[in-house]
Image (cartoon, rainbow, N blue to C red; front, side, top):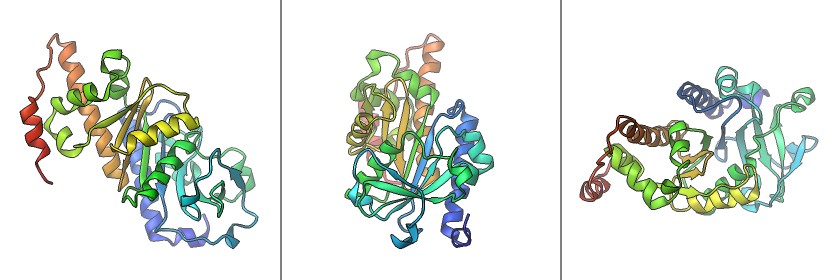
Length: 271
């Protein structure tokens, strides 16, 4: 890492948080092999001019994102394991800057050519940047995007009876009070589409316009938030609710869940 980036205390704190959260995800068992990815907007953390990008590696984006022009992002590398990101973050993540046209990006860090042959941004970059573009469009405070394969949430979308936003949210809110309190808008549902495609990126953005979490059918979960810890917590709470649901069913108990009135009452709490 260049000295300018090393001496950036805000960036160093974000890298430390990425390391911590990647470790949490691995410990949860939500990141088989290279599963999952993380991105963080560095809009208020790094300012780099167009001129400073001259000569740096450049890649095209599958779709233009003009409102991200000039913005830097920290993104995990494709094929990189969460357990390795946790132990050695700067060997497994990149810092990129969307160019002035919004049609491509420069790789700011790392700068070593031999590393760049094996370290590229996550294959889900179109989804991540599309979500960040939506957040920029609505001036949201959300700066973090996390995608992971939370077992319990993946399991819910394996049954067609649960592949419906209304049904999913009734189950998740009903299993534990904190779910309604901390995820009052519930989750959005994205029917199965090819991972890494523009189609799934656009569908995810639409789901996240009304929710902070989107469940991908038979795949995983995308969550957005203001900090890495808070974004992880959202997924953790939802996974806990799904786990309670399946634990009851495994014991031969059909869970009652909270009543509609109880859920509505929780929705009025302010924290």
